[in-house]
Length: 158
Length: 373
Image (tube, rainbow over all chains, first blue to last red; front, side, top):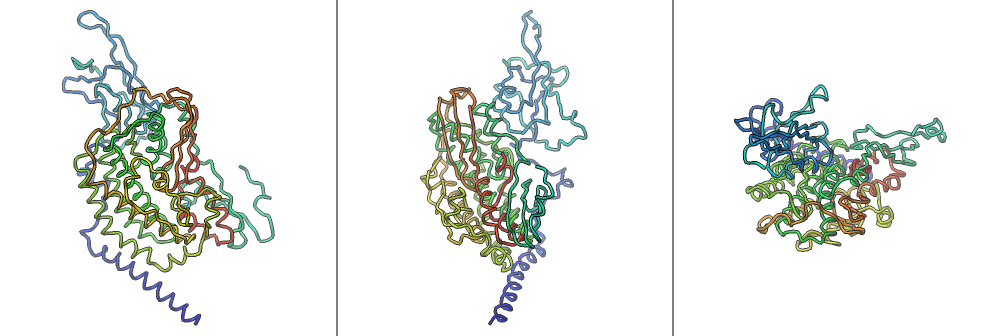
């Protein structure tokens, strides 16, 4: 009785293994069902989702103008302090002094891509970009200044 | 903790093995100190603290909009449901009515998270017990679910799709068709999991009658989620204390009385199908309307104590907030499911072989960052 049960179990195990092997064999022979992406090789065709949060970017238009007023809402909303905005007083054409951004420092090494700064921005000056290949050899390269040199605030944005 | 020699050699023939913190089957940095007599386990002692990030303390300096994002890093496989708990406790304190559209979308994404989490558990349970192939089949469907998260929430794992009062932005127009597509793919392929792993006699024999957790023990150790439901304990928070619109939905609480690792396996497999059932009820009738209720710019909770529990993929997550009327919590405490579930392991692993400890850990489905926080 024991021997019958013993060999019965072995037989059932082999049968269940073969059931699984049948499935793997099916996918082995049906090459059109492959779903894997060969990532580093498909860079040219790789398209990230539109909303994917990869990094914070500050779009500039063709006249090198951004929309950041320096209100620091993003700095306040950032939970881990990866944004630092340094402002300056700029003399306008009519002689009045106005607050403008000097440097918009973004610490990519501290950012967790939560997207709260983008939500908080009242003028949509910053967005989340799709770029995700951020690896660098040294940490200093992860500290970025987002406003381009010589850029200024777009007219009409307050 | 530095171990002296006397910690390792206790009796004749008995020795101590450190499993982890770098052991692949512990899925993270959990260290189990195992006293062995030959291959038989005499005692297990979990050592924690390798991934402690003081999330609770950090929450005390963050505003009520910000503090939820840290919970994505606790149980990273059900990040959306953790964020939901944080949003719900603020809504409860402020008595905000969440729009019906936001509720429906939250539940759909939450249940997708649950399916994805159980799929990863299925994959890694097979991997722990020696089957590498099931991993790829489970990840095929999980990848499809993650793409939905990617398209709609902006991230695959740490969605951060929640604000107190609703959700951050509306889902994309193709959300419904994409979810239906993924559900169809999941249902069509579900039989493959049964063929390749559930039906495997070798796999079954490794789980059956291993790691018996009785109902009394489950209550005593505070186990929740599928771990406790496999011991016959009815503890689904979605049924018992419905939150966020779960009271309107029809689904079954999966309970098994097997008490062993195999029962825990079966409960999780059946739970995935219940999640599919929940999504199918909602996906065609997402109400129109607002996605977020109006809250003040700086959220200040009234003075007092607030508690909200939700059912994550692994059990009950409780968020307890003490507010002094300010803009950030005075004290924030998370009751995490994995910590309680882990505490049962030393009890149930005693007397089994060391190979069975892997099976017990695989079916209890521990996520280590949730234990330490």
